[in-house]
Length: 388
Image 1 (cartoon, rainbow, N blue to C red):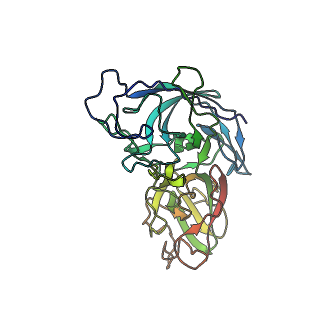
Image 2: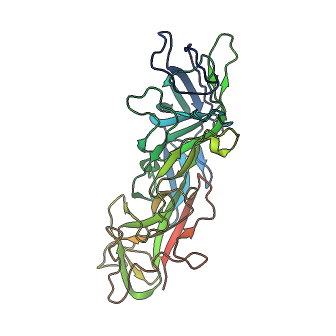
Image 3: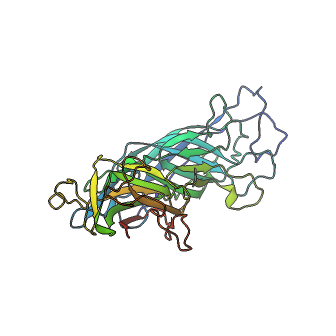
């Protein structure tokens, strides 16, 4: 597979003298010299291949699923489709940190990438605030493509010299029907490339910067879920979505690097869970994209659409979730109807969604199941079984 190559070119102009160290960004006085500029110009180019992803990492911005199984209920692969305008965040930082405690380690800006075929390009200016000419203090770049930005503090209104800051990503609370041609881009997939060098150009007199060798990987995992019950032939339930807790269901938070003066993992932006929910008693309702309602019996057979004819209307339908066990490995998925509180069981008796409807972990605690393989870019087919 071709590596996604990004070329970054920056034109910097002179600043007024500053008493701080020239290699660190600091607050500047408002009476700037007329010759100063507050931007660098970035030219980003990349290439990608059409790739079929089989339980491996994705390196695309727009995904279509390949479906198989006797009833088209299983994810078999993910293929790359063309995109056009793709939003993204470029985060520049110094992985060695800064000695000056007042320095802010990080410069992040929102941009739009042009994607056509296997080409990814961006050409434009990034507002930097006032920097010493030719002394870009950041030596690394991480890039975040796609996703849905709910809020951000990397570009504050009215502040030219915004440094550091964070980004909050949210994702649709919808589960897509697992079927041929399903468009996984509706789930706003996020792709990341981490900690790639930023180097000055070699051309004499040029003030260009290059960051090459980026490899974009799908962040998170796709999970296709089918349902069964084995708690007795007389038991019947209905569902039109899932209740999900944990697994990053409440979104992601991109935190700014720390200004530490030592080279370590704190000196780079980090994706974390926005709000932890693995201990939630109710979870978050994630409805089905096609708004269908399914009925299911406790005889271990596939669900059905028509309650009056469970044999002829059987539908072993699966629905795909986009989850992030890498930032929140504990969680749970269960059938839900309309919201997280409605009892899904239609049978007379004591059947309820709680207290142990989530199941227990290995230690017997109801804190959620731990995902052992949190490798980003994977997809899974699971069977959700409600037992006795």
